Length: 397
Image: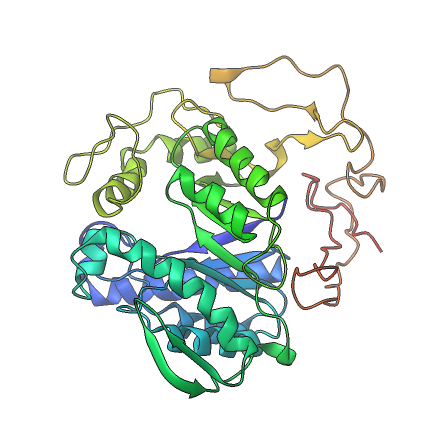
């Protein structure tokens, strides 16, 4: 498992109509990505939405990613997602922007694709039939890799045309291969399609995490049966976005989880995203969001779904031999019996002795990037032990 952050330009309430607040939010979200890079996180995903007040003010992600390319060193930066409708982004322009970002990031770019948030968003581009964008995506996603590979590209399609040979430039970084390809999976059927195409699945979770088991299984079955990947290699990965509240004070984290406004984001999702299924009984804006129960569950298996609220030292560690939790720290709403296995005095990942939290920590040196992307045999590995809840855990050589 690898960890990342998702920045989407969320600005609820009256602040959405205040230019000063909007500017502060955008700079703050960019700072999250920079901090994630400093602390060795793997990904930052940047959303792309248009005219979705409060929910997302991130309308030009490639501009943000160009800035982040210079401001970061190691973190992978991805589009979450790039709208492939030719009426929103012409396929030639999409191919050019992706290849350029691949150069600026020197192989750290991840290409997430999709067809937009729903009818309100795409109507700003004079697209009035939300179902018409699906065949457009199916056509475009197969043609852009051809643009990178061919010097005399031409195409006569149903949704766009390049009438005579053109050399689409630039080509991807180092002149070969391409960034890992992903697709946003708002519907369960898209998980299966993503697997069959050999591309990664991007999903957003607003329900109990165990409800996703069938969709992940469908994806894994699809990619296992994939014999002709859409790109030059399989991108066997699922990116799942969940709400996480991680504070140094566990009590404070749970207080944040109980706030009434915590459900407001999901009400906006249900309002704008009318192409994906929603849970029954969920209020849609402008209906007020339903508050969490007074005893909120602090794990992602909460019956209300998705939100994990805890402090870093309360996260359960896992045994490297069994994969089971060696000691669990559940909230009182879902208390479980502790495992008979006691917490080891050594790090569960690097096997180095755990030093006391007050001791002097061994300085962490950022490892060099080996390999440009996670194509065959090139996935960069993180040397720092990320599973240990102890900040003083020493990095592996």
